[in-house]
Length: 487
Image 1 (tube, helix red, strand yellow):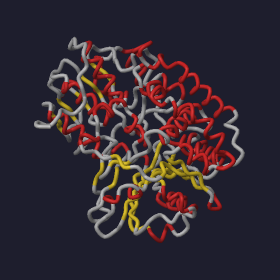
Image 2 (spheres, helix red, strand yellow):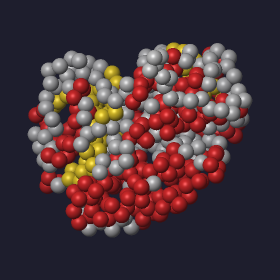
Image 3 (cartoon, rainbow, N blue to C red):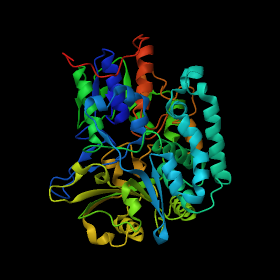
């Protein structure tokens, strides 16, 4: 039994179904996918928008999704010319391409420092992914087997936090800080620096692709495989108590820790319940979906080659905005993340040529503010004339983000605070963070390692525990698609 059909819940369900188990997935929303959904919001005829995740560097790098083989299942991951960009005032910008060398050349005097910082991780990308995404319980066979890479990452994080890499201009530091903003936490900090180094590395390895047609393409592939192996999916059902579910030998919860406490009730050991309830949530984001009549008129045309754009100004300006949010204040110029899927996926254009634009603004947790004006102003700052191409918009304040995904309380799309400690103690400090103290009941959401992102790894790790401990399986199921008869 799986509660929640986000990428982690579906990864767990697919793994168990392929092992020959009878699997039922229960989802509260009308459609599956959690943060990987793409819907018609009624903003323009024939146009769809990604509800949460839109760009997928972790999907391209995920060991689970690579074994699952999205491409063989018809999911096309499309790459823009540039992974991400960070414009600055005066028309200057940093642009990160899939090529490390091309990126370094574009950064001029800071190219050598950028290359020196990221080359070791690009060259050891597989080891880095094992360190970040691997199952810690595997001991010497898991992330610990890549100690040198882990130590190098820790050293780079310390340098970023303590003194910063020795850049000579303000472009490269801003470019790196913008990537770190995906952690939605205070800067400088170890969590933001680690996030920035990881995602910057992935830009030069697997890229930052968008799925053709939107994020739901990944969800559709997982659901199709689940059903092909006898699994069931029920939507529109909220679970408040374990007794509401059919009896099962194992329960995998793709939920927040506090939801797990509510669902499990007195079954949970008191100490475990207290630890899960104390798990803190992070800062909020507010969503603004836009419809444009034409491309964003970036002052620096090279920014328009990127699928993702980070807005926040200089490293110092971005850090001040993040400090304001962490202190519970709305930043005057908030950090804004922008994704234009049409840069890589022309199928996302509406029938009349209109195009969707995806944006998030960082705000205090639980904010009720409509940030449309703040977002438009921040884009206009780096793209004069932007207001003239905005045709329609839809705002979702941080306080309402949980209405379309209960795992986003207060607008925390990371399902828990992203700090150095909470990346280790997620949702609590434990050798096995997935187990809840009840035989056969595990937590497998982004509130567990390896944390946020469309990668399915938490669900995969938890499912393999269930297969071993509850069903006695020693050989894990193959995730690759079965060959078509006659081929």
